[in-house]
Length: 566
Image 1 (tube, rainbow, N blue to C red):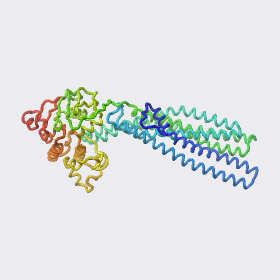
Image 2 (cartoon, helix red, strand yellow):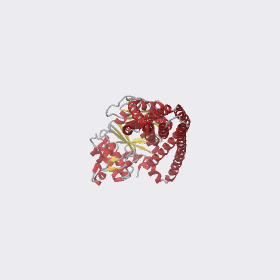
Image 3 (cartoon, helix red, strand yellow):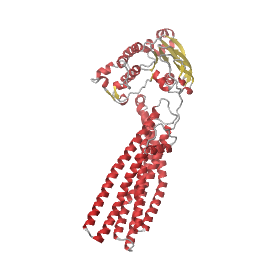
Image 4 (cartoon, rainbow, N blue to C red):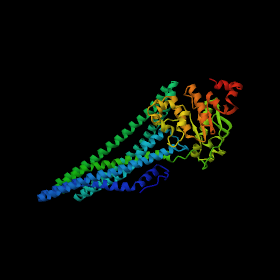
């Protein structure tokens, strides 16, 4: 029985219910097989007691052989039921964890961000550890049922020998679970806090890895490391607290289970001494008292795992139930088209207004890096349309009326710090494998020397974040990816800051040639790119203050000359 993945949970409890409902079949088979395993385990001391009883009475070899055969059947049943039962449950557990991992990752990768106060490292922790712990509920329920079967079979068998023994097992089990259920609540709250602190530490690590190079540049790495050490120490202390709570829980459970086993053994010994039960029943009672430790331990561990699964499900619900920051429209922009910024106010932008005609190559010279970054963020739809004043129009249609996927297919905004992924040069340039202009993009971005440097060419392996490439090589690889996409509108943000002047000059000419007839906007202070553009827009104090060719502006605008001349 399955539940469609499109079902939207509203809370952590909903997540657990969906997981249980989706795996009813696997859990039913698992419960049957694990119940058979526990019943076989329980039957073993019962069979031993009966063997002793009949051996002492009959002393017949045939009865002994039959008893040994019965023990062999019990052992075989125990072995096979455990093996296949755990195989079914663990497969269902792993599959369910993967489903939730994909759901969380899908939320994190959606074009429209969700309104949740979590960093990428925290979302990663939720998609891994919390997804795994939530899926554990699939194993917990069948194991709980099988443990209950074992306890009930033991209680009935002991009750048949003497009612007081059966009642002792039932009353003792209820008392143990009542005590442990109270303790498990502390485990749930402590686990939630630990997971939150581990997630914060993971987010801090992700930030450090991303910004390690610039931190080294201005000597801020030591302060950053101290910051990480603080959150890491908090996570460590909370982990120690959780370990202490878990240790206290496990110790209490073991002590209570042992006390119940001792009580059953002593009571059975007293009843046998008093002649109220036979020697065979005494052997059975002592065997069951020792066996019952295992299902009781498993039974008593279940509340802890349920609380941990519930805590993890609630953390997943933070991501899965968070509303989107904005609700995009359903439209799609017309092919080709122009780009219009109409009175946009956001961050450092003050009523910014300009128009780029279809097929035009325009450069925006921003005097303030913050203004350049804000403009790139607005065009990349990283800022929802309702979060700023004014409008951005693509092919005459406002971005808010279009779906984010359609906007990004039509208009590609390549950031100055674009990611480089683990894989090859080829898969980084053309992740979809459908581009027809990879060779032209490699040549235009001047990545040809990197390709020629390695025997594998475009199949040269690239490490995560481009760790085996220089800064200039990573930047040219990112530019090649943007050019290979061949989008109708291309926006480049500082695409050549890490390359030398000669290479920059060649790249500028190549971009102008390759993008001829396609709408292109470059946000830059590079003289080479500014000179290659059809016209330059000067962005100062959040507005366009001048507009002309690069060379005319150099001759007439002193501030422009000081800002871009090298």
